Length: 393
Image (cartoon, rainbow, N blue to C red; front, side):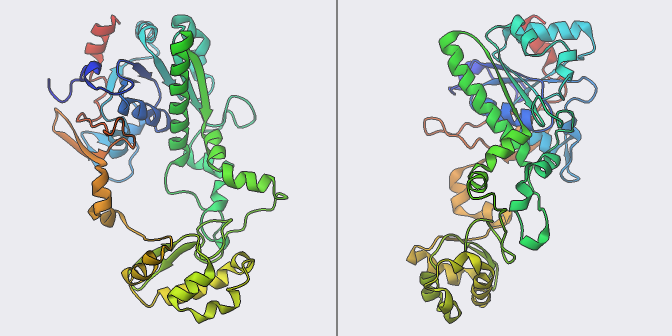
């Protein structure tokens, strides 16, 4: 069997082996959900348009292209199969319905109204396969004035309030440098699917699992939103100097050292003052309220001291004293670190057309083993003939 051919599900030994997931989604949220299911043993059949496939094949994070596709597509679609289906073609649509009749899970993240026009909304899919677990991801849910707005990560972040928790107080709203709305929505959907599969094992009936980018972002903020809602609705105020959390007091933050950066988490100011020999912290030692109200001044004093010595110098003082601190690593330092290597989080995936991608592995271990795959993301329709023959499409 060459690396481009899917391995039989029965050989994986993973919890979801034998389950067939039909993934009609594209971009990031839905494919991230199916990636997690695939890493747990499910067989993922990615339904793509014959003329170009998933739009994320051309969503570039850099100018690197591998095998005609973007690195982001390869990262999020490794080890999946591709079935080319023209949803405007009645014969192809009928074939897709026959596949749905034999599937365990269907994932879709079309804009509201699109899946209904295709005749594949939940009720129609349920009529085809009552045991189907059907998952829908939208931008903003199924009701309200935002429903038809583009469900894009940055726009969802903008509407969620999360940008006001990042950066320093004078910076205005600061977005996360990652597609957090997509990834969190994908993770929430995977959780819902797994729960629905458990219930299906009891009732023999499927379910409709729904979430949205906005719902995932609101849940992501549950700690700070709960504080806000029950604390007189006082708006969180970020530190103006080296802010790391809008609600936490000094010294919580990241500080420049002589040769790098040092993160310090929750630590009593008197203990830190004694260890670092900072006389300037004397006015704040016995006044815990000032650790928040004067946190900018306190952090500026700490920063002045830390700037005079290398990071390792401070770690040698702070870590033996059980101070919660860490060197801030860049990716090069991370990859060279024994702590990272011990996790064994990277894998090489390949395809028969000489595509080789070094990418990440599942964050989940099952019975002490992290699943590993060697197949790269598929070409558009790479498995169409095989899937059509196998499922009688």
